[in-house]
Amino acid sequence: MDRIVIQGGEPLRGDVSISGAKNSVLPMMAAALLTDEELVISRVPSLRDVSTQCKILEALGARVLHDDQKGVLRLRSDNEDLVTAPYDLVKTMRASICVLGPLLARRGRAKVSLPGGCVIGVRPIDLHLKGLQSLGASIEVRGGYIEAETDGLRGTTIYLGSAAGSTVLGTANVLMAAVLADGRTVIENAAHEPELVDLCHCLQKMGAKIDGVGSHCLEVEGVDKLSGAEHTVIADRIEAGTFLLAGAMIGDGLSVLDVVPQHLLAVLEVLRESGANLQVEGNRISVEPPDRPRPMDLTTLPHPGFPTDLQAQAMAYLCRGNGVSMISERIYPDRFIHVAELLRMGAQIRKEGATAIVNGVPRLSGAPVMASELRGSAALVLAGLVAEGETEVHRVYHIDRGYERIDEKLRLLGAHIERVAG
Image 1 (tube, one colour):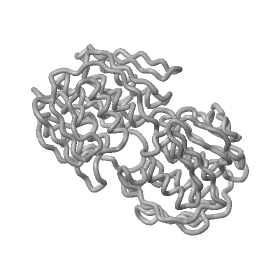
Image 2 (cartoon, rainbow, N blue to C red; image 1 turned 180 degrees about the vertical axis):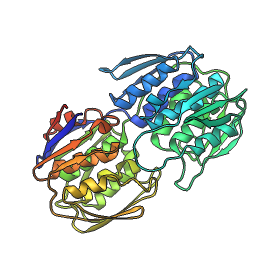
Image 3 (cartoon, rainbow, N blue to C red; image 1 turned 45 degrees about the horizontal axis):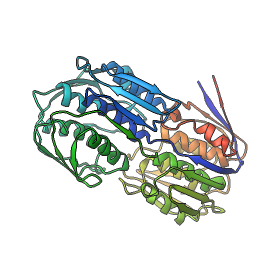
């Protein structure tokens, strides 16, 4: 099993181009099931999750041509006989649940394994099922599979609310079902994350009629048929935020390129408040680190708040803060598995419920650490970049799910980092 080995203390310099957004491309790939024409997606990152989604679509009868070097996917789904998304594939990736809505909308039935993904606490899919049932689907859960069927979806008004706010994947699932439903659907408390907006734009190119894009209320007028389309995925704001935090930790003239700064406003504000120096010029953001970050209170929230997918990386940054910081997790209260590994590196962190109290220390020490989920593994890599001595990050298949060649990108910036097989 591969591991990443880092010799800490090497400053990061230069430019890094940000890849296409994982959280955009995965549901967008599922949208190929809504038409029998070709959907062409560009700026597709080379990720384990993308490869898994390709296999799921092939299991559902789609033809997949993936030019990994050019980052282009060509998808055609003109075989409507297959409706089962198997456990062996779905168990590794939560976003695979997004095939449920398109299968129901176009094929009238679906059998999809309950999803897996990172171990970051309970992430129920009840809002997905509630929304699809409101559109007229009959749903049962048997033997670990969601079995759903319909004699025709019908538009209605749906409220997708929960204690943690709106649901991004739930909104995507219900939206993709609604675009082929009979009549008008109103989705209240819809997610409006940039990745969801990106999906809406792709569906509109395919002929979907969607109003309110970018708001908490989506209005969808169902159509009889969707066509093929070509769409380029937006930049991955989580990858961009990860590299900006790396630059704020040990940068010396680091810039991220090909990003949308408006998607990163909360992240940029946190970096400024902590003392980092930022320059934003078009689609380029440059960062210079503070001597030590100023302590702060940070709370994860739905967009446009600070993203939960950057909480672990921000914790690694604040571990070397000049004082006590508090990090509250409002989206996934159990998303603190990385705390135990940061403690092994000399961090001082105390967890109280859904809050972590971080007492900043002058330095971290390299150590063998274990990655347990995607974003936590990125946090351990960031900690290793600033730690004294050698850090070994084990089980890095987690990081390969969501970061395109992160070790290569960091090495080109000057990091002393290598991937070791076995």
